[in-house]
Amino acid sequence: MIELKGVFKNFGHTVALRYIDLVIKKEETAILIGPSGCGKSTLLRLIVGLIQPEWGMISIDGHPVQPENLLQLRHRMGYVIQQGGLFPHLTAEQNMTIMARYLSWEKERIINRIHMLAELTRFPKDRLNCYPIELSGGQQQRVSLMRALMLDPDILLFDEPLAALDPMIRSELQQDLKRIFRFLKKTVIWVTHDMGEASYFGGRIILLKDGCILQSGSLTTLVRSPADPFVTRFINAQRSPLDILLKDSP
Image (cartoon, rainbow, N blue to C red):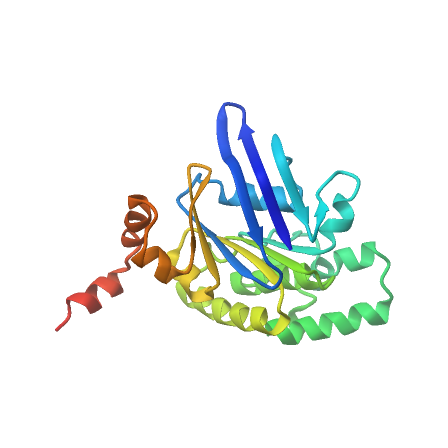
């Protein structure tokens, strides 16, 4: 579904990605993880076409991402960013339907899609006419998710969408999203710096460092067969206080 060949990206003198080769299969859930500045978000922005690589090729379902077909390819992708990125002057319903209205969908089709997505994401329908400032952080992210799903895209791209939420809301949304992924069978790329979140969603974990893919595979593979000492250091650094407490308890 998604392929990158020799993708190189820099910002001035700073190299963000170094000749990345990556294939993500149809209906696969791929988790991009690594420390801040490793290139995770840059890779996602390249796929969605928000920025262009200096070298290399990116293709979606066999079609190279180029200026002439970028808009068409974007309609096949749903993109969710941290804190939702909702337009503050639009209601929840207006935010989620903005692309459908731009593409002149019939009113009945839009209404049916709204009801279906509200049920799927467990968003209260009586809050659809509220503005983002009137919604909780979790509700804002559900609206952002519904907006990403509105056109029924083949690919879902998530750039640390839950990072700013408190732990209980974050856990609830993780459970709902995992259920939605299984139900919809989409190709998913999830960016995070949290190994616990990466292991929860399962799929293939792709660990980046300094703009390079250091290792790719299951969490078990990364733990038992690290390709580099940094892999072990990164995993060990993410032990939570609860993990340490449980390990040290009698």
